[in-house]
Picture (cartoon, helix red, strand yellow):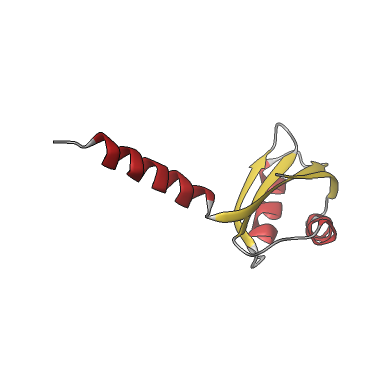
Length: 96
């Protein structure tokens, strides 16, 4: 039979492992990003960074969400430079 304590413990462990997969969540507003081609360029440059675990681009909100790898980070200056290299301007950067 299923033991509720074991199931609950496993669920808590899985949630903990999922949240430990990255160190930091960063959101960057990007000025001028209007199409899927724009999004793909930014996503590729960010994915090339060693510190990046995951990138999600939201065209409707004109923002990029980045999860860094554990024990890794990207400074605001680094993020602004990556966005600039992709042909756009980084606006507000939020962490958390």
